[in-house]
Image (cartoon, rainbow, N blue to C red; front, side):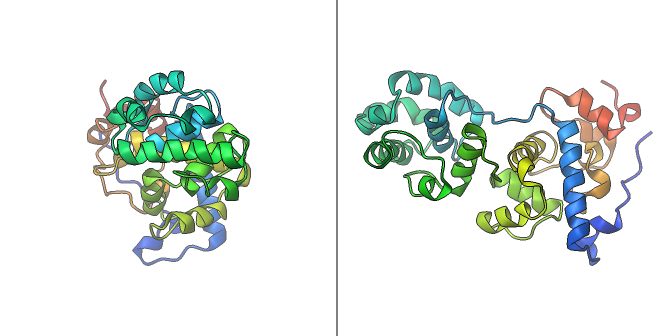
Length: 263
């Protein structure tokens, strides 16, 4: 027996012409964060790194590339280049040969070598923690800076990638696609101490449940408070087939659709 379509709460109806106060939106956003924490307790940065410099390089490589591919590429790179000085003095052709599988390898090589030179010349070879200093470095914008600060330095930050843009718009928490504007909008809704983990949870949710082309609406724990419920299949059995990751069974349980799904 399939579950009936999730009821739309008044607080989640803004896209249907209703209104949602900022306080109600903040409460809904924090409930979403709690539900995502339960659904994705393993949420974390999926790039492999051992220090801030490695994370910065890996994040640069992750542009237009999957984390899986980056993690297959970086061991050889990190073994050969261990410091900012190593990157600063690197032969571009040798770097390109290693990182070619990540795509856009010429531009990425230029950014990585430029990063090494800038760190040696202006920061004593060490990656700075300050946002203003980070975004002045080659290859590092606000998204990359927030990834570095949140994961390597423990400074809370909202990572606005394609998943964050898509999911928060679908949830009616933000409006638009400008990364900087969205970052500030989300900051107003989520407690600062949760910014980094909220980013990881949303990214996991985007990869495992709320998939770009066909979200698994009928198997989503956020269904009852999502104004975009119905963009994907609402039949639990059909939706469950779209779930990805290592904890599909747990996601099905949290969505309360075990009765409709045979596995």
